[in-house]
Image (cartoon, rainbow, N blue to C red; front, side):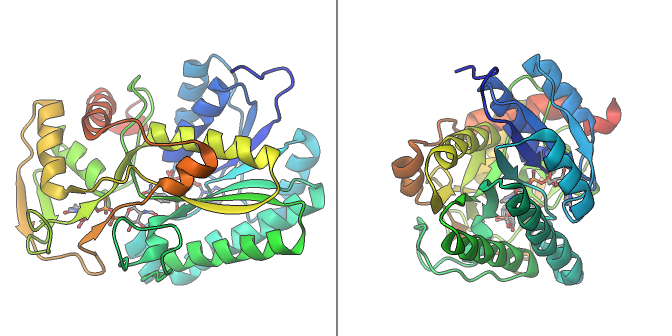
Length: 345
Ligand code: NAD
Ligand code: WQD
């Protein structure tokens, strides 16, 4: 559906990053004009240059920080946005253990500054990037959206705190309309091979690490633990294609534009895959071998986590459509065509 003439404009914080750039492309495709605010602390502006090329529409970027109230006030006065997709934040679990204040300041402080400026400007529709990390080691799988919250690191605690702030805000003023989306493990890339995940330094997450081994940037994968109580002893996660996630955001946006109140959903496929299944699927997709070695468990890791995504189906009419093969094929297209990520351009 193209809404270009009359469609509400959407502010996308963190929109130059991995998930945000895919969401911006999906928004433009659905006819929503956008403006991105990103401080480029973990992104390249090239992602949005390519998004604009793919969409054939502008994807304007304001380089700036969600903690900068002056800049936010100016931007909101100028741009007349109707809703916000809020991706901006720091996301590395290990780093959050070493630098907790940076995480609380950036993620929680940044969000309260953003919300204050939005309230002043009368913009009360927001979609927030939460994470399955809020469940910690889940008490049951598949994880229902009302499972207990038990984050085990500062990053996860920033997500729980922000969720609570958003709940308080919605209770304080019925005009707020807020979607809290708990993503499971986002992977893959746009099928064009033009945008994708481009982590700085050594990847923390499995899929980008596997991709970099396949393309020859790294020698072998360390598989963290082979003695979990799972089918093959390696960790099981709910990997979800970033395109499915992007579609989930457009569905959530449509809902917050129409209904007041706050709601929370899991965005996952409902299926778990082990590390070794990922390795085999990526080998099949890339035609490359992925040498690996099983090493000790990574501290803080859990055996298995996968979503019960029914709340997203009920509230948003959304479910994941893309399978593990597409995730690996698309991740490989991106990695093989951009072996050094955006910095190769
Ligand atoms: P990303 O790092 O690629 O994107 C985050 C973006 O926010 C980056 O472009 C970064 O430059 C920007 N940013 C950070 N702090 C900012 C600030 N103070 N002001 C302005 N911009 C700022 O990460 P991503 O994987 O695209 O994640 C997007 C969101 O989804 C994050 O909130 C993350 O916590 C959440 N999330 C990610 C995953 C995952 O595994 N990738 C899983 C669950 C939730
Ligand atoms: C997946 C599996 C590892 C790397 C993290 C965050 C979470 C969320 C998503 C933001 C696990 C194994 C990994 C490697 C490996 N992010 N692995 N070798 O840990 O499920 O979740 O990203 O919200 O908060 O914690 O994802 O991709 O790091 O790991 O064997 O080099 O791969 O042990 O079983 P995780 P991951």
